[in-house]
Length: 574
Image 1 (cartoon, rainbow, N blue to C red):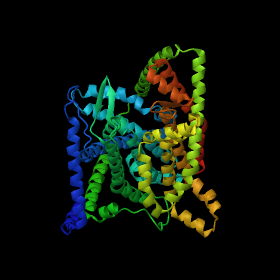
Image 2 (cartoon, one colour):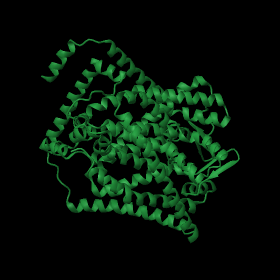
Image 3 (tube, rainbow, N blue to C red):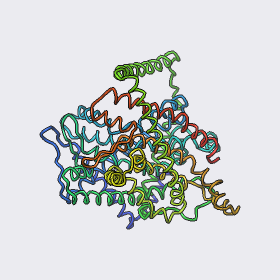
Image 4 (tube, rainbow, N blue to C red):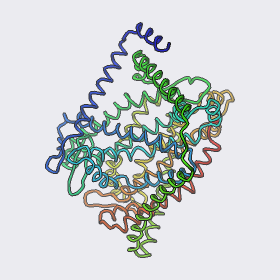
């Protein structure tokens, strides 16, 4: 009956102007993705490497290659987010290991993994450019995934108790619970954090598309490598072309992808009354008017429902034998034993390297780590002071959001390290010490994590709560104390965690900067690791990274876990 009704309705269906535009857009996207993706499998060797042309007419092609890498990395980040975040949220023992692991991974310099991953992927795809492409995508993935994972994990941790009870009453299975409760509840925060993570991926374009490994300089076709080549050759016009192209590309992605997602995500807002104003998107409106999309959506929904129903019925009729508890426990112990052996092996090698350092040098690195930790704390606090009022203003004003979103996207996506020379010149002229000057450099790339989370938190405030505040005639300070701050607090904690982790990562490049023959250095762990890496001093590198990881874990346990507990128990909707 369902299919007959559907076929009968489809006979009355006629294509409209919106359907034609949507179909042409999809065909164009698939064609461009296939055309650009086929170039990733080009032959590659030491003598046969892609060359980067600084001709302006090549920029659209390079921009397309870079954008394809960004979206592949984003898709992988989204899949990782759903799997990793869900396991960490619902398995308390795993959470104690998985969440500190993310803290460490987002704090350790991402580009330090690049050389190793290039060699690994090149070995997997010998003689093909695909290996280098995979390494580049992996570098972008590591720049995107941690913020998204934190957002999804914290959303699952703050799902209101009545929604949990409703899911139990309706006997939702794992898949139904995931699609009908967990993803919809986390959608607003996930969209804005994905936007921020996608913007963070632009930061690694130049480094991930222009790679030096085994005395080879490999440049992948892309806007990042174009910008790097322009800087190396001192071509000012090409640098301007690349900046303009990147800004246009960011605005284009915002209008065609992120703005429709922001408008669509409002349907998942947890509220009892409809908002007076909501974010809009001309692309989203066009897709909604396309009846072709509605027909496809219905067809897919019926198909998925039939498959899940049949699978559920078969699973109920088939009784799978459970493995004996001895086998289960043995398998678990074997896995943990393998992990322990792996950990002990590398820990032993690290201890041997660290033992080459003297006691004074070991203590000095700890002191440098505390100095950097203080700068990370100050940069996070300063970022909170300006991002909270600005983020709330943008998030609670849809008209302002339409104007501010692309601007914030451009500012957050633009590689912060390209502005370092300007700050270096300013510090040299004003005589500012890098012990203080490193803090603004840390903030350049990390403050946006807090801003985007605050915007998401402000947009997630239910309209009925706003109306209740108006009816009760609360003053502006009371609205902030009783409504806004409690509502955005969980999002603010997530933003601060990712911002502080990003600040640790950025300390490697922000505590040691140079301009021509002048070098400015701050006394801290970041500059220590940067210099040790330059000199190839492995005992110093390993001990510096170990100290950084230990500090991140300690701060996570003493500060962020406490704030997470407060947000889960006190500041979430019931």
